[in-house]
Structure formats: C-alpha cells, structure tokens
Length: 323
Image 1 (cartoon, rainbow, N blue to C red):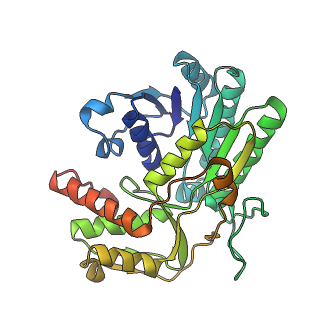
Image 2: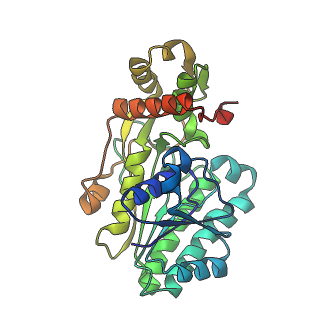
C-alpha cells in the first residue's frame, strides 16, 4: 500500500502515520504546511524520516492529482477538515475545505482509476443530530439531522461519496468517530477529556465545559480502524458509525481519578449535553470489517496519562492548548 493522507498532521493523522511507519512502510502527508508537532510525540527522529511531506491545498484538485500520480498512491486517506468552531465562525471557509476538498479527493481518485484502489475518509458522529430520549443505539441509516455546519458538511460528503460510486465505481468508506481521545488531541470541542488528562499529568486544574454522555474512542483504536478499512477487501461506498466506551462525563472523571487520584482536586465539569447522538450502533462496521480494536476506557486513559507523564519527564509536554 502506498498511502497518501490529506490532513495528516492532526491527531488522528499522526497516529495513522505512526502505525504505518511501525509496519515498515512510508506514508505521504499532503497538507498546507509541514507540522511534526503531534507525530513527533509518537515516533523517534529516525522513524520520522519515513513520514514524507507534500505541500498543497486539499481543495486544489490539480495539485492533489499531480501529487497522487507522482508518488503512485494506491490508497487515499482523507482526514483534512475544519472542525466545529471554525465552521461555525466561517461557514464559507468550512465548506471550501470540508466539501470542496472532499470533492477534489474523489476527482483525483476518479482520474486515477486503476492506480488508486480506495478512498477512506473521516466523516463524523456530528452527522447525527441529538437522539430522542430512550431511543437506544442508533444505526447508520437513520435520518441524519445535524445541528452544525460541520455535521452538515459531513453529510454532504457521505452523499457525494455514494454518487461517485454509483457514477464511476469509486470504492470508499466513511467512518464516523465521536470523542477521539489520546496524545495529540488538542483541538476541537471534544478534545476536552484529553486536555483534562494532560492537565492532571502537568499538575494543573482543568474544567471540562460540558457534561452528559458521550462515546470515548481511544485514538490508537480509531487509527487502526481506518487502516483496516483501507486494506480489507471492499467494493462499495458506505458510511459507518464507530463505537468506543459510551459513558457519562462523571464516569470518565471517576475513571481518571482511579488512575491519578490527584485528578479529584483538579478536574471539574459542566452539565451541558452536547447535541449529538452518542449511543451509536456500530454492528454494520463490525460485520463488514471486524473484529475491530476496542481498548477499555480505563486502559486508554492510563496509556494516555502515562504517555503525557513521559513527555513531561523529557521536557516535551506542550501545554499551549491548556492556556
């Protein structure tokens, strides 16, 4: 597999890059600028040399196509996107990156049929609106009714991906992560549980601004799920819910206290429920691509906390996102 990854310097992209390099392969990251901040927390300097950089705007179809052709990419992982706060404050920019950028990815795949075998892309649980009380786990194919521009853009991408398969037989998989947590998660509304873990490692207080329930998914598991979807036999186009540990914020904080007792005095939280359905059914994803990794919440928190402590010991714990 020769993997071209858009938006690969974010948290999830850094973990995917690390997992690819650990398997002995190179990965090419197509992004506006090189930024090794997150991936350098996961790989040593020697391994970082296998993470190749290609400068480009994801919405620039010609540049993206030329890049994919030049490296003879066989698979594309599309992670580039602007998250909820940016899409809310600047919907036009959000649409350019999230929607036009996705169209550019599929246009590239269409132009290189025979070379590119599959596109896998990040959708989001934000494609779902809030759940009805007592509705139980929600499947992939319920009516999508997002309450944010970001969620609406993700729905648009899922529909366009399906049309590219119907019109041009471009296979694709869209995955809908919820709250991805772990080292490197430092931006976005649902980054706050990770920031709480980091704050405890740094000995700082932290307030999670919301409460209620959500689905916490360990970033290594999510990265591995994307790679499984890239490599497994599949010739269709569909989008799938993902599922980790569905818990309340109170339960998350209690689990963190079990691992780091000092968190009892450092971490507080609000009570506002985020307006996205959190109890999602991932049975179709498991049936098609499983079994998928699913790290227990306590273990994921412990691994994240210990990783942050190690970075602190080495003087490499970046606290800018806590300020």
